[in-house]
Amino acid sequence: MNLSAIILLALGLGIGFGATVHAAFPTWVTPLNAYCLAPLGQAFLRLIQFVVVPIVFSSLIMGLTRVQNAAQVGRYTAKLLSGYVLTSAIAVGVGMMTAIILHPGVGVEGFALDQRAEPAIAPNLIDWLVSLIPVNPLAALSSGNLLQTILSGALIGVGIQQAGERAKPFLAFVESIYAISEKILFFILYLAPVGVFALISSVIAEQGLSILGRLITYMVSVVSAIALMTLLYGLLLGLVKGKPIHFFRSFFPSFSLGFGTASSNAALPVALSNAEDYGLSPTIASFAIPLGTALKRDGMALGQAINALFVAQLFNVPITASLLCAIALSTLLVSFSTAGVPGAGIVMLTTVLTAAGLPLEGVAILAGVDRLMDGFHTVLNLMGNVANAVILERWESGVTASSPTKMVQIDEPERSLSSEIL
Image (cartoon, rainbow, N blue to C red):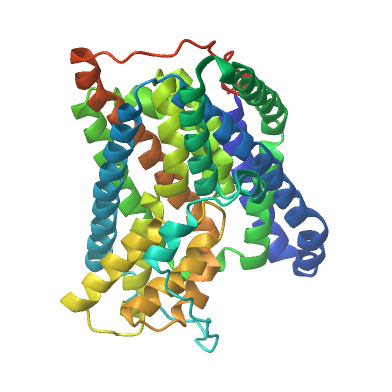
């Protein structure tokens, strides 16, 4: 069995183990979760986070130094951002359409609505954009701020291009960081089944499977909408000759890890390795995939749209055109500012509900199944990210065919050990 299959097996065993503990040994749930399951899961996530920043930073610099034409970097960014906005808007529309058709919030019973969530402050767009600029690149790296890390890497990459020969020692140092991070990832990935088992069994042991029956229509709505977006991306990849079957087969390891950990950041190193298996240009992969990990959240956009309409239906709020517009706009903006870590979606849901004027009590209901559905959201986040990278490569192929770009010759990093074991 390869590692992806073992991760999925661990996921199934974790669900069974958690359900058994919840049903047969309820007194064990609190101590088992506090002293074993939760620490194991969090330890695995922290180990993955340990290599995310150095891999993003080093791979981005290496990708940028392959391109000597700065205008090409700007063209990459403009095309990616336009693709992100368009496909995220489609994801919001698919989520809202699914919720309107299936009515997941109608007829839901058996929940006490006495728990109130504190409203979150809606993010200020200008302040958020200014905050992306790092004051200190070392502080951005040490704090794990992915967007600031990407901008720091981009600025340093431009500086390396301008410095020319004098920057070669630093570039060699960056390549060493990348190689060392890949070796560390090799060992961490062997712990993935244990981490996935601990994370999912902890949730099921606390919540049990009974909550799934009461929210089955909601869960079916989310999965159905994600299936529609998956089909859409398959069609888009087919139109640009992106080999959809080969695409899903190549990136399946990162999708499975993302599903088990519910973290786009955790699956980023594996996604970069899978890009090699797919045959994606290293220049585009090392630039587009880290950027998409920080910004691209199709699963979050789709999920928040369904969540908001679920709450509206649950509390019999009339579905008006103004409400739909408020949900669509706030969901689209929030999706670009949500962290790629487990549980971030349920926190940001309060912002969407506040912007749309919906009751915040619905957060308490959705929190029960959020961790389970977060895995599906993460898979779509990853899919949208890497699919947009592939579309960019196909889009650029017409440009580079007519006007080839001069490249800086540097040694390619050795094939990642993580891609070999996956």
